[in-house]
Length: 376
Image (cartoon, rainbow, N blue to C red):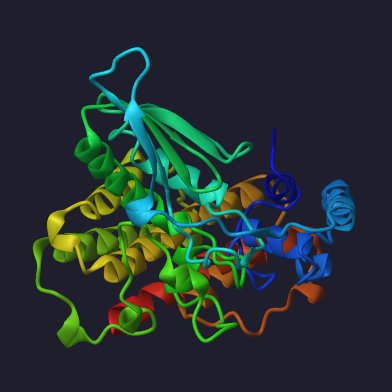
């Protein structure tokens, strides 16, 4: 059964453009449901083509009375239970919980894992898992990790069966937590950890609850806003990550130039996903322990570059279908490359132009984040 959060997200444009002030449509939908933002904050939902979604979201936000639940106790290292499998007593079944940073007993407004970002992570690293599937509808993932059967639930629980022992189960949980940690939702703002670490979210408290997240992984808060260049560790995984990010950015800028020149290839290559998979895989490198914050900030940039590429594909489609003038797209792209979209306001545009502007904003955000990354 779909959760209220999933239903809310389905009634958004699902393009993660950021025009509403939230980095993802999922975060915007969560905030609408709890009443902290108006639906009108999203200019895309104001279009006639989204009338049904707009009304559904209004109904949902009106009917949902209270989403808060007390946060559960957090067991040591996230281990909830561990016992022999009923059909194979020599193997172990275990249940762990990914900690979202909310103190036990405090009201928890949202879920633990953002389903869209969770599925993005698992899709990128599908080669690591056998038959891993992830449902955005259910905010639930299942599959095999080597010989272990794995289930990841939206409330942060990770169920495993057929582990060779307690250490094997815990080691596997550590890999899973590191893989999906960026999908943890902050309880104070409803946005995901990647967005917070990317610097796209204004602080609403002394620090975000999500910065305390992690059962086996812990963030260095000193590196959340700024990483002095002399403190970036000179280790192979960090260097590899930086090189991969540079390659992803280069691929994106080539696509921008192709769109401007009218020679665009409307494809998301396997090579792009392969690079992102390599970045995520670096998180489990033993040398990355203690450097998780740096890694996740880099991964956040990779996420938004990937989102920008999807936006470029959508821009190309709008142009080729004649929904928006190619000259208008080219003009927006050139302004985007110069990191200056301030002169354009959605309320002066028609429907297709607003959509084009939204997709350009996805690209502009990636440019800005990369610029910030290099300056750090």
